[in-house]
Image (tube, rainbow, N blue to C red; front, side, top):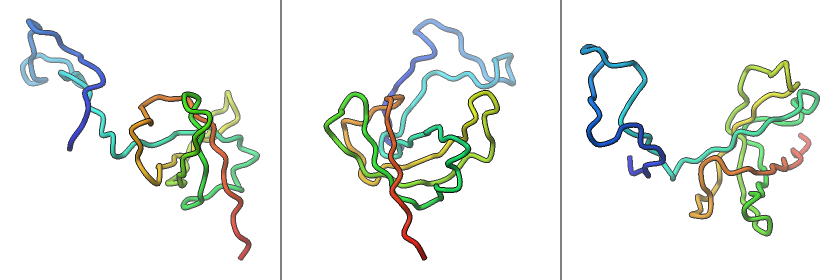
Length: 117
């Protein structure tokens, strides 16, 4: 995939070995980011969980761009709650990728009301 290097884990001169040759598992040379498939992970209070479902539309406001609104939709709910925070994690995907959206930006998510059936 086309990507952007967001983290360099090795520097010139480092000895790199595979796990078979004594290297550590999970380490690599760099971290690539696929900018065409950025997602949002938002914490949602457990008490609001019944109001959110996959496919639901949402509006995202990034702290870096408070005057812009980005359309997104819920792609899933992580099947594990945080006992410390009393939240569940909701995953959303932007409807239209934008160069202004960068990885790890803080955001506020507002979920659209679902139509009654």
